Amino acid sequence: MKSRKEMKRSTVLAVVACFALAATVRQACAEDASESGISGSPAVPSKYRSYKEVSPRELKAMPEEFEGDRIYVEGEFDGFTVALPTYVERSGFRTGRYVALTIAGSTMPILVEKDDEMNALLLDLKKGVTLRVFGRVREFSHDPNKDRSAPRFYLDCVHVQVVSDSIPAKNKIKPQRGRGKAHTSRRRALFR
Image (tube, rainbow, N blue to C red; front, side, top):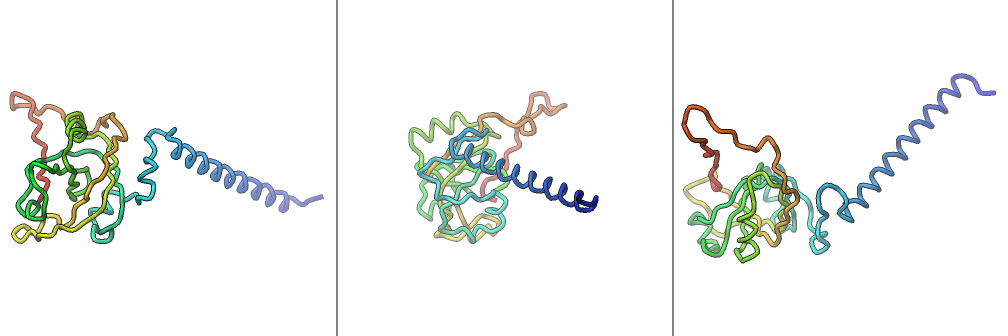
């Protein structure tokens, strides 16, 4: 017959083993769901599975670490501009051919070549929609001499995937009181 101490110890070991098994099963189910696209967000397209996921915060803190790498960034759409600064145009990006997207939490511009599909997507996008953007991090060939706060790197985008069409409640703009009409001038400059 086992002593109380031995029984307690074997019970604790059994409980720990159950929790470890449950965690392993949970992880395997999550991997299966992400591969088949069952989870809340759509799966990464098979063509872009080799791309490494990077958070907007990591990209903002150390973009030089990812230079030349194939990455994808997932975040909330913050806006776009078709007017590109001079140093961006001197680097080979023409205002009529490229659009610069921004994702909340990252100051790095995401340069996308305009075409019919991208134009339709840009017209449908609303601020706060979750996007997954695939591309390579590159450095501008012309340095922004005057404005030192301007980004030196950009994401050369090859694919944009809409992950979630729903806009989080925290991003809905409320009308300001005392100004008459509702003002929604919460835009921030892209190339600061």
